[in-house]
Image 1 (cartoon, rainbow over the protein chains, first blue to last red):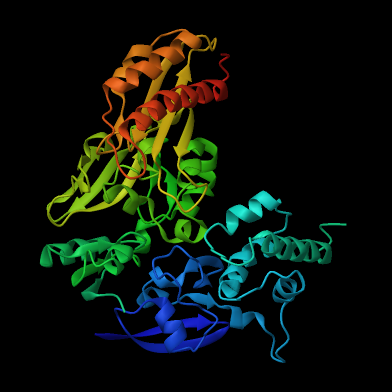
Image 2: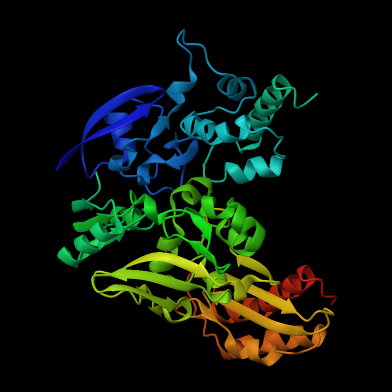
Length: 163
Length: 293
C-alpha cells in the first residue's frame, strides 16, 4: 500500500508517495536524495541517520515515513546556504579535525544543532550527554566535542550571551 | 522497508480500539523504538501494525482538579523529563526516563510504550510502581482504571485485554505530596544501555524529620516484572531515620525479589546490587526529604 506524505524538508514543502512500510531514512535517501542521512545500524543505536524533526533529533531508521506527515524535517543538506557555503558547525568539524572517515559526521552535526542553538553554555559533560546517541569509531570523540564547544561559544558571543 | 504485512493508522482513541478489535493479532506501535527493532531482528516479521503515533489526544502532561498528575501514554521520555509539572512535583520520574537510551531514543520512545511492553528493565517502571501509579484503559466495553501494581502479568505480558489500549497514567496527589524520591540505574555504560538493575525509592518523613511516615521502594530486573518490595516498605514504616533503617531496608527487600542470571549479570551479583542500591536509594531519598543519616 502506498500513501501521499506532505512535509517540509530543509525549508521546502514536499510531497512524497511512499510505501507505508518505508522508514523515514528510506524516504529521505530514496525520494529526497538527501544522502547525508546515512544508513548505519538500522536499529537506532549508531545515530548516523539522525535528522531533526520539528527541531529535535530523531534517528530516521526507526521512524515510519508515514509519521512525517505535517512535520518539519531538517538534514545536513539544509545547513549549507544557496551558494554552497558551509555553516559554522560544519566548518568547525573540519577545522577541529572532528572528521576522519566522515560517515558519522552528518548525524553528529544534527545532534549538535539543539546544543549550539541554546541560549546557555553547555559543559563538556552536557555536550557528551546530548551526543551519546551517536557513534564515532575514528576520532575518539574529543575533537567532536571540541567542534561543538567552539561553535556554541561562537554563537553565544554573537548573541551577546558570552564575552 | 520494514518486514510488515500492513499498517493501520489510528487518529483517535475510538479508531484505535475499533482497529484492535478488527485485527486482534495486530501489534500496537506507539514510538516504535522497541517494535521496529524487533521487526528488524526478524522476531515480528510479517506482523500487522496499528500505529497510534498520530493520536494527539494521547500526548501531554496535566494536573487534574484533585491534584493528581495525568501523563498521557504517547508523551515521549524527553517531554516527560522537561515538563514543568514533572520537574516540580515528580522529578524522580523525569530523571528516571532521562536514563533511557540516548537523546534520539528519548524523543521517540513513549512512556506508555515503556510500560505496555511489560519488560522488567523499563526505566519508567520502578518509579511508576513506587509512586502507586493508576492506569486508565479504554476498550470496546468502555473505560476502566487499575493500579499499575497489578498490571504486569509476566515477562512481556500486561493486563491489556482484547481491543484495549492504555490512555492515561495517573500519579495520585497522595503519592507525591511532601514526598522525595530517588532513582538509580545500574548499567555497564552511561548511555545507550539497558539496566542491569534499577531501584526507585521515595519517602515522606514526619514533620520533625525524625521518623518515616510513608515509604515506597520498587525494582526493575530484580524479578520477571518490575516489582515493589512491600515487605521492606512495611518493615520501616514508623521507624526512626538512621543507619538501622538502611540496614532493615537492605535486608528486607530480598524477601520480595527474585533476580535471575542472564548474560548481563549473575544472580549473585544482582543480589548484591539489590542490597546496596536499596541502601543508597533510600539514603538519598531521605536526605532529599531533609532527614539526617
